Image (cartoon, rainbow, N blue to C red; front, side, top):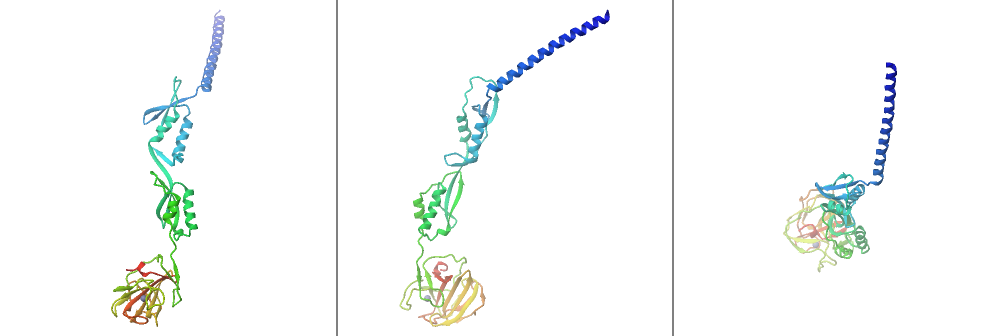
Length: 332
Ligand SMILES: [Zn+2]
């Protein structure tokens, strides 16, 4: 009797459990169907905050974020090269909110309006100094090209430098840049050869060294001037003083000539390296010999009036690679 009762209880229990399992399966399947429907038909929408202030909604978070990233990395079409933004937006998922209007463009404008914009432009430099600014590389190249075609004297010193700044510069037109940068080549006059230096240049060249003044006195004849005493333009400058006034080397170097000739009288030529030479003529006395090394300011001779000269003076010449330049570019 007792045994049958226990068996019946077990049978009932088994039936109840079977029903429960069915019920649970139905519930789970329904939930899964509802979730699938939400995932399929419901687009997640995000509330966007900037500095804790709600600035709008987007259902395209990744697209909006990509647009902002592109702006920071490569700027926009208004000349911005790249940018930093003061604060990045924060996104908060909002579920099943009704009546939300998305406004990605407004959000983008608000996020990008505060920050630092870097503009890209091009500087034309002459001897490493910035001269003009141009908006694009093509125009900058055009300036350089035109100056090359015009054979501008400074063409080898010109360069284009890419610049970034938080402000745009005042841009100059190609024409104005070319006009402003053009330098005429100095005239080179060819003289009959004497002891050295066939050509005299009215231009300036950087010698790469600085000179000290060689003597005291007054300049009585300038570079290039023509006078009855000479048949051609003056190869140097004359500094008149009294006989015996010390003459100093304008820079350190090696004595390459220390001799006498009928026009220069007693004279000295010093090589300063890199093709730079100086010459001191009409001396009354020479104090150094060929091969001597001299220091800057060392007394090398005494002023006189030897050779083709009408009174005591120093005739000073400065040359580079055999071309004579105005000594007054470097001394006095
Ligand atoms: Zn002279």
